[in-house]
Image 1 (cartoon, rainbow, N blue to C red):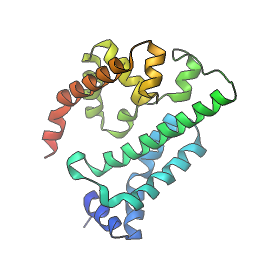
Image 2: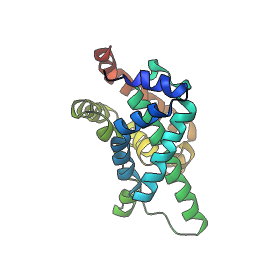
Image 3: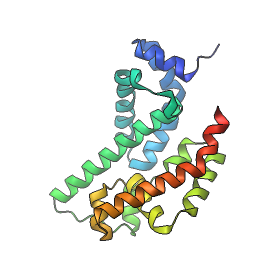
Image 4: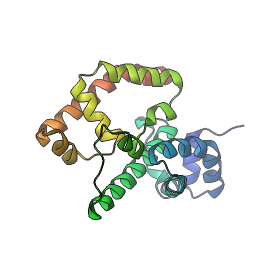
Length: 191
């Protein structure tokens, strides 16, 4: 009988190395594909994938089922690690005085392109997410894109958009709340 993801995470929390291997077999290709699309480098994607499963080994006991399925917990870890790597590379580029391309340029799109939702959800959930994003006011959608898909911090977004930091934070929070409300039925259908 196939173990549930929650059972596997419980076993990992008990330091069962076979459980880590089972979770890796189950989700490594999905996560690697998403990381490769975000990072555009096989080496970086492989490194971050390894970091994700090390983090799972160390932090499996902190998983909270009420925050979403284990698959999405893994995706959040991977997304956060990838964003950290993108930010680190951006900082190194600034230090070497290599200009970062404008966010509307094709080079920038290649540098930080990512649609993690489309790669980690099934097609139906992705379509709902896209529709929900399209219903948001344009300024909220743009700020959410910059924060979650392009890896900019709130301060960097404030600088790039010439908006006060408080306004950036408020619009991102309001956008997230509107998305949560629009997509809440997805979680209701899973219970």
